Image 1: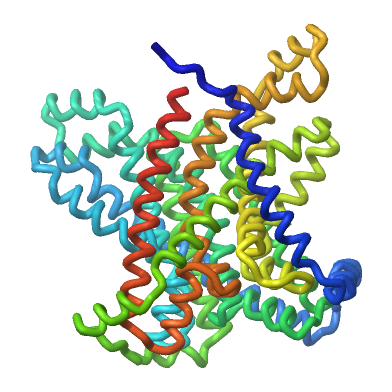
Image 2 (image 1 turned 90 degrees about the horizontal axis):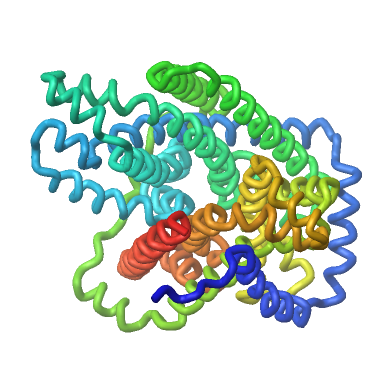
Length: 509
């Protein structure tokens, strides 16, 4: 006997309950001294600085950030496709080889995928020193593993009947794979690859916040010095670039998706990837030529077993893990539940456009900057970190939800209106209900991303594994670094497995 399940649209609203404890703690921690600072911050949005020196610094930082994003994105796509093909079972079976090497490679790639790009950046910074390629490698390493996972999943889940027919007819395995699977993989590469370019630009900005150069460094310095007019100059420039990039990618996907075959899509996108990678390389060398004299190997001490045992007993594991998991649950609840709740308040096109602009701005502000902004008028707490990550990721979830709602015809909503339902109820069960399974499935994936992002705000907010990792790196306590990273990898890999199960559950519903 099947158990009754809650209505899907109600489950999309249920995670918004995380806002209650977060807002209570945030309101209790408010102090009046920060209100005047917030007033200066908001007024700076209307009067950004147009000083030539400020504009020159913003332009230089933007150039470094975009070049880093282009080069790291290009490398991650090329490596990700190669690695994803190598760890796909269907590729090995096509050559009648045992698939155990593919499984072993998938296990190895889970480790770089589980570590956030910021952690890679700080580790490489400690080992190689300050160099433009450090930020490139910090993004390319985890992104390559992420692209490999997506590419492999689509290869193994595709319809293999055409492939089997070609191999049975005597076609070479490589030719059969390219002929049978390329049509669907071209669409995957264009849609997911374009999304990864946006993520690379955000990651390059985030790394700059922690001192790896670019526009993020300029934003961090102006915020710490409370130069809000200069801060808003950088924020408006970053917002404009992100908006233009999103619109260009949407336009390009729409135009190239009409009438282009799979192999032509892959060829076109591969050409674009290589071109942008070359542009990023030459752009970095043009903007920061003095830092390309060569990498300096600083090195790190390999901890002994005695040091690892001592660090394992001295660290507060239970508190760090509970804080990290609590931060993840609260932030995921805000990110998943806030968009449908906001749209339900006033289901009208004008209000939805306002929400879209708000979510766009949330996507563009890096979580560390959002934490620092919230700390201007509040005491440090776990709720501040959860609110910062939740608002940032609600921008991604809100965009996804609006795009899904706009693709629906609305016949069910019109039928509910004709039956006398209110505007909110007809929107809830007419539009949101059909979209809920796919939205919740992506929310499960986003929760996995949020778990990795907790290290970012943990380094600023003084909580969880992120703060301990930063303390260990700054004191060169390599035994603690190894143990904290191992614990973080175990948590993120477990969360990834749990999110996969949740996605499959909701996609089947």
